Each structure stands twice: as structure tokens, then as C-alpha cells.
Image (tube, rainbow over all chains, first blue to last red; front, top):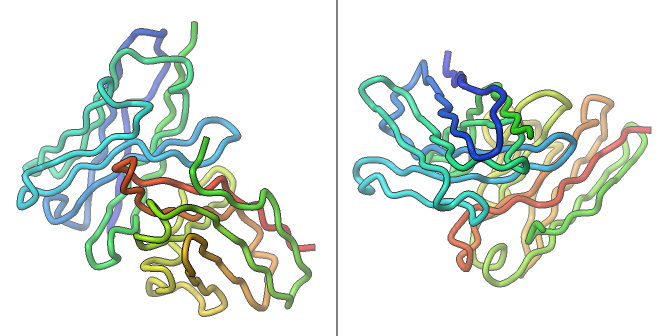
Length: 122
Length: 110
């Protein structure tokens, strides 16, 4: 079964750091672009960033709201994706989803994890 | 704050058709593919439409997408109670160099 499972969410104070993980199963992570998307409580979806594949030099793009604070990385040998979040703010409180972004769906996100909750409180 | 605007709500009775609009600009919808996602409360979104009007396998043909200029639409025909969910449009924005989502539309089946 094709699946993504996020972990690493939790409570953190403003200015703190957290690292989210996204474990893939049922497919080879290295074959795909991967995105992170978040959803604040009661709000809509917000794109966080994207990490491309090795043939695309592992390039990244980030939303302006997280650029310079968040870093997406991958370990293809572990079939895992990561989101390192630094200098966290209260407005980063959200459910964070990782999503597969295949070329065969023209980079629509077809497989999503269940989400992991990050709460930044003061 | 979102660059894509959707109506906050839409509704219909079972069997009716509902259309959700998504308004953007030349830097996003007009020059890139549009996607639509369906989300039920407390669950992850699901890809409903890609490449403006294509359905992934398993998505009923009651769902259809279209795009014209700087706007896109999702139509749901033969509305069913299980269609009651939030719907989001999405695309790439060349000016922002990032993916953008619409504000979201809550569909209610009366």
C-alpha cells in the first residue's frame, strides 16, 4: 500500500525548533517531488515548500512565510522526507502534511500523510 | 492573504449541480495548471482534479474541472450527501515561485 506517515510534531515555544519526518512506504521516494502543506486550526491549506528529485539537483522552493526558517531535506536511502523548522512563531501552529507530487499527475499532490500537529505557544 | 479567491460556501440538494469558482491572475491560473482538492473534516486532502480537467483514477466523473483565462471552476453534478466537504483550488504562481491554494469552499448538501 502506498502510504506516507508523518511524525515529530509537538509543543514548542516561540523561537524554538522542531524536525518533522515523513516516512514513505509502497513506493520509492527518490522517484518523486515532495511537498509540505500545513493547515492552521480552522483555516485553509497553505503550501510550505517543495523538494525536487536528484535529477533536478534536489532544488527547493519555499513559501515566503517560512523561507529562511524552514528547510526541507530527504534521505532517499531511508525513503524519508524531513522538515526542519527553526525560529518558530505562534503563527506556525498547524497540522503539517507531507504529500507526494508525481510528474504523471502534472505535479498534483496525489498521496498525503495523515498529518502531524505542531503547536507553538508562549 | 491567498492569491486565489473562492466563494466561502456553496450548496445544493441531492441530484443538483454545484459549481465552485476560483479566481486568480496572469501569474498563476492563466499560465499554469489548476488542481482541485477535496477535504473532509479532520482528514488529509484528496486530489480530485489535475491538469485543469483531468481526474485521477477512482474519482467519479460527476466531478469536472475547467479553466478559462485567470479563472477556473469545479463542477459537481448529481450532488450526493457524501460530497459535503471543503474544496480547494491550487496552482503554481510564477511571481511567487510557489504553489498557492484557494481560500476554500464549503459545500453543503441540503
